[in-house]
Every structure is written in structure tokens, then in C-alpha cells.
Amino acid sequence: MRVGTISLTLLLAFLLRTYELGAQSLWFDEGHSVWVARGNILGLLAERGRWEIHPPFYFYLLRHWMQIAGQSEYAVRFLSVMCGLLTVALAYWLGSLLVRRTRHRDPRTDTV
View 1 (tube, rainbow, N blue to C red):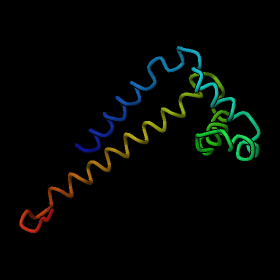
View 2 (view 1 turned 180 degrees about the vertical axis):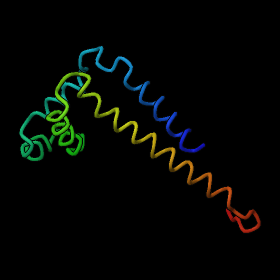
View 3 (view 1 turned 90 degrees about the vertical axis):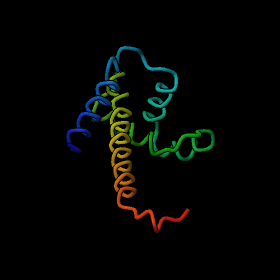
View 4 (view 1 turned 60 degrees about the vertical axis):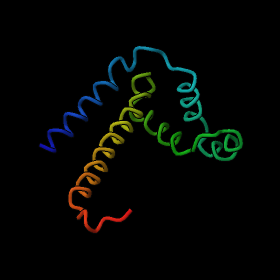
């Protein structure tokens, strides 16, 4: 039952995230991320580190992702789809841990 539930949940999350994923051109923030990721990686820390508010790991990841998947709207946005699916799976796993933990509690020893 649990494998079927998470599989169905991830399939639904995937379908909702990829529906017309490449239909629109890149928005300003997406274009900015692509521009930063295309730039000099060492310069990202040195120069842009002063004014860029986003952590540099995303740009490093996006740079390598674009080398593998390409630079189309669909390809660039698909990295966020994969991160979103990972987040859904992680939330499901943490939720199941919490439910299991509360089921095995002894109400006589619970303290607030």
C-alpha cells in the first residue's frame, strides 16, 4: 500500500510540474539564473558574491545541468522539477516517520 501511495503521489507531482513546462519563454528570474550559470564560475564567488543574494550552489548545479540537458526552457526548468519531486518524496518520508512515531507512543508516558 505504501509503495503504491508514494508512487502515485510522485507521478501526480511529476505530471503537474511538467504540464506545459516549456510552453512559455524564460521569465526574468529564470533568465538571470541561466545568465549567472553561464558565466565564469570562479567569478561567481568573487564578483557576484557581493551583490548576488542566492547561494552559489544552485548556479553551479544549473551550469552542469545545462551541459547535460541543454538550454531550452524545458531543460532549464526540469532541474527544478527534479528538486520538487525530491522534496515531495522527502516530505512523504518524514510524514510517515512522524505518523509511525505517534502511533507507537504510550499516552501514559507522554509529557508536554
